[in-house]
Length: 234
Image (tube, rainbow, N blue to C red):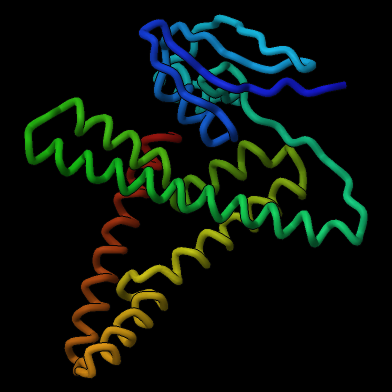
């Protein structure tokens, strides 16, 4: 049996979003939430279209508080188990890790873009830009509360799902740790590299102030993300 492949999501205003992975499908349906859309997909080599109405954000948020959570299409992704031979499993793992790295950086980019829109909207008084920026930024990040909620809702999928979530969290933390963010390992290496580049080593007090400020910002973001997660899932 061949699988259907979603190619594009379009609304009645003529706006379209090309879909090549699950992240783009989520972003497309989220952008057109509550609207009538046309889904272009490939079925057995033929390109077909089907019209439907997406769920609104309030409906999706309400469903997450029940035992039957739904996405904007009215469904949620599920696992398809594919058995790999022993020799090919490491190769597939490398490819999957590459995909997860790309998706992680894409999510980080969307979060930073949303944060920029949020700040710009706040400075200019543009309520729409501020609200859209807030939704875009908060939809891309999650803290311990979000992790518990995901594991709780997907626990019935079995141990493989839990292990996959743990692997994704570990990979995300590793990537974040190497970024040039003060207080993290990547930030310390970046400061050390700058000191050697300009041949002007920082004093211990100056370095402590830099990393202390970075840690304060990270803790503030952690608290903000926790508040957002509590409002999202409870």
